[in-house]
Length: 338
Image (cartoon, rainbow, N blue to C red):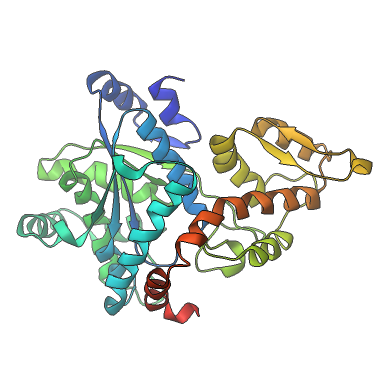
C-alpha cells in the first residue's frame, strides 16, 4: 500500500486530496497533529484516531498529539482539575499506543498551554477574532463544544485557537473526527486572513455507541467502554449492546471491528460450540459483515468474541494503572467518577 492509500484508508474526507498528494511528493517526512481536549475520560472510541496516527507514522510523518488543556477549560472542564486531567491523559494516551505494540518515541506529546499563552499566539487569537463573526465561531464549534441553553463566550474562542494551533505547531496536516469538520473548515478559511497557509484536513468516522443511535460518547456511560473498565464491566456492557441480527447500521461492535480490530490484528475469531458450526476465522472486515448481514453469525456469538478482544486490548492499560501513583492521578482528575 503506497503512502497516499495508507493515509486515506478508513477516512471519510480529505480536504484536499490533491494537496495531500502534492505534499507526499514534495516532503519525505511531513508533519501531522491531532488535538484532544482534556475533558472526559478517554474511551475505546479513541482507538479510531490512534490507528490513524499509526498509519501516518508508517507513511513517514512526524506526529504530534496536542493535549489541549486550555481547550478543555473552554469546554467546561473545571480550571482546578486541568493539571490532574493533563497528567491522566499524558499517561493513558501513550498506554493506548503501547497496547497495540506501537513505539511512542516517534510521537511528540505537546501541552497546549505551553505555547498558547505566549504573546504572539494571544495576539493572533485577538487578531483572528476581528476577522470572524460570532455566528461563524458558534457554527464552527457547534458539534464539538457543549454550548447548552446559555452559551459561554469561551466556546466561541475554541475554534479560533484550534485554527491557530495548526500554525503554531508547524504542521502540514490536522486530522480529527467528522464532528470536527466545521472547525477544520473554519481553519482553512481563516488562517490565510492572517497570512498563514491553509493546512490539509482529514476526517475520521465516529464509532456508533453501544446503545441504539448516536456516537460513542463519554457523556453517555452505557454507550462506551472506558479504557480502565474491568473485565466483568466490559462483558456486561457488550452483552447489553445494541446488535440486531443482520443489521449493520448503528452497530458499534461491527464498526469497532472495521476501524480498529482488523487494522490492528488482520483477523478475528468467532468462537462457538461445534453444534452451532464451530469456530470461524475472519481475515477481513467485509467477510464478517457479509456473514452477519446474512445471519450466519448470531449476535451473542459476535458479542462474546468481541468482549474477549476488548479485554485483551485493555489488559496492558489496566495493568499500567494498577500502580498506586497512577491510581491517585485518576482519582484526583475524576473524583466525581468514583
